[in-house]
Amino acid sequence: MPDPFAPPMTGALLALLDDLRPGDWLALASANAPMLERTRSLTVDASLEQVAATVFDILPISRDTHQPLTGWAVEADDPRFTDLADAVQGLATDGSGRRQELFALPDDVLVDNAGGISSTIRVPWDGAPFLFLVCVGGARHEPTDLRRRRALAGIC
Image 1 (tube, rainbow, N blue to C red):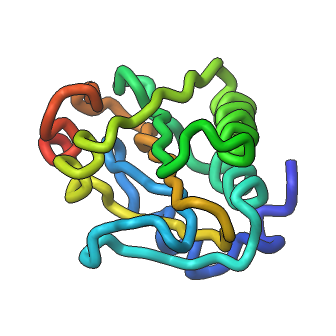
Image 2 (spheres, rainbow, N blue to C red):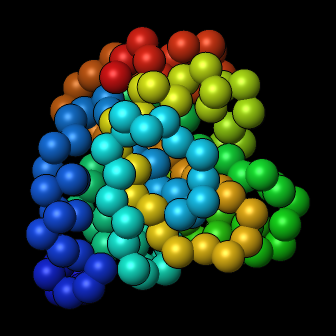
Image 3 (cartoon, helix red, strand yellow):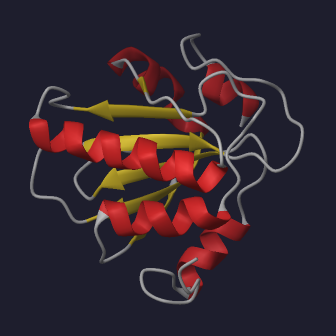
């Protein structure tokens, strides 16, 4: 296990993760991804892979949510995004100890439910905007299906 206090783990990132509760949604996003201004946001100067590996080592992923790991991108067929999606899925699987399937998040679901995202960790990225959402576990909570409208806002 990597040293939990090595970069990119900072006090600010630990505080952001500590504030999350079961059923909350955390976004891992490119710096240029569209997000609501009221969403708590932290920019980390590390790659998405480094951040995801650190976060998924300590953040429990929901067992009660039908699709606890989702992805969205402006250019979902971009090979660079595909590589990121594979990396995030693998890191989430390794961190949670069970297979994590990455589901595509449709634009309308993101727009309708963006208010349900509790916090965002932004990473540097020079390509088209993207984000990954992970539902926090750690205790029993109401199952969420992101394919239903208002699902995020309804639970968070």
